Image 1 (cartoon, rainbow, N blue to C red):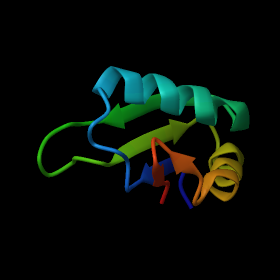
Image 2 (cartoon, one colour; image 1 turned 180 degrees about the horizontal axis):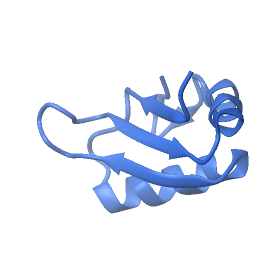
Image 3 (cartoon, rainbow, N blue to C red; image 1 turned 90 degrees about the vertical axis):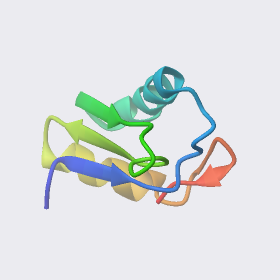
Length: 76
């Protein structure tokens, strides 16, 4: 287990800063977020990493948001 969540299947047509802001707004309800890494390179397109302050928050966020529709695509 890790306090870092890996998100996949993100809509790659969304602006990087807007994506970071919206991910923060969605996941901050589950715990303190230390960092969000979302890159727009060809290899990292549609993926992001969320670093939580503790493992319990990351686990709660993962369970609550798995499959949730985010910008017309289900979160993985």
